[in-house]
Image (tube, rainbow, N blue to C red; front, side, top):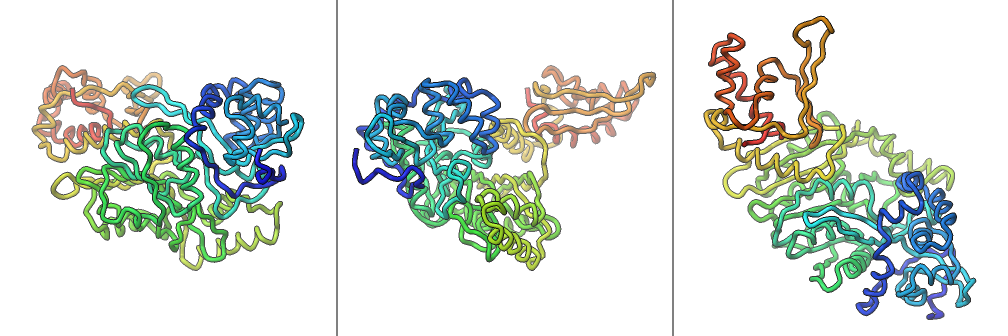
Length: 522
């Protein structure tokens, strides 16, 4: 073991890990069977739910109870921040070994004796992803959080796989592409996903530390494959003059008023919601025709949240199709509490610092006239030709299908057909009810006709629509055999309604049902 790498066991690593090509096979061999399922088998659901809430104690206790099971030792070391003996750490990494792990910057060791203590300097987390070819397993390294270190995170902290990154991975539309850009790659999780369907991945970040973690995770998880093109720089600057088929970004979108704590992983260096504004107005010039950008963001709300987005879209350097879904709104106090807690800036760790930062959040937002901060998902697309046809700004706070990307892709395909289809073409098509759609009726027990009919979508965005008898009848008859026009004529006769009136009422409803995935063309 290199003496210079013997750090005190309470040290926090400031050297990101590195991995020599010759060491990849050994480390992968040690991690191969240590999957998400293997961890849960060892520690149980309660510990994993607690881990999802950034509580590591239940996992430590459960893993310790599992004794010298190798998966338990790996989990104690790399997930739950526990201290092992050198002998236990060697048993956890029999092929790679403790000395190599210390040299790589993954571990710190107290000494060379079997009973000397060893602990991890970084978190390594098993992650699973579903692909068209089946499930793949990855191991993603990143900085340890404050739940393990007991400290507020450093300004150059590199975040791991969290709720936001999982959401972005879920909503991204997966299709084979030539070039993909992961803007603000962090630990590289979006690049790992993009690598499954892109010939080339360009990964950028303003943080040199983040890029080092991304390179490590690329080397560990994709041995022998084309390496990512990793570039340092802010936002779109590293790809000036280049175009892509897919741009994904979990950018540093947190809004931090003056006087509040700043961190590289979440603050982009622009005032207020300038990071999201820069992407909304500038990403279009980096998209090939038909190319798509998908990203998450926060934005200021002063009155109607859509006004800000309308302004950004009008200011875009390239006219784009746009679909923005606002998922949540926090008032300034809630927002301050959320992001102070995220950084480990709490009253318990320093009352004066906490209150000063909290007050700075409130003063800044109040001075700017901000009533709320929106969070949501954004899809922008450069049209293949002609003018944009999609401008959809909506709110949705319910559950989402996961992965959601396939549904979004299907909705875009339906939108493109509807954008050019005449009413006669809509009526001339036959449709099939999507498999996740159900009909719910409500009414008094002795009432012959229901008072309310709901057509509900089980997947996708979980939408529901209130239907009248005619619309419910049309949906119930869509089995792919009859066209919508034929069904409309039959309903007109059955309900004693003029054909023209029935058709005029059903055409826009059919368009909405097809657009949102309730009906698909047979």
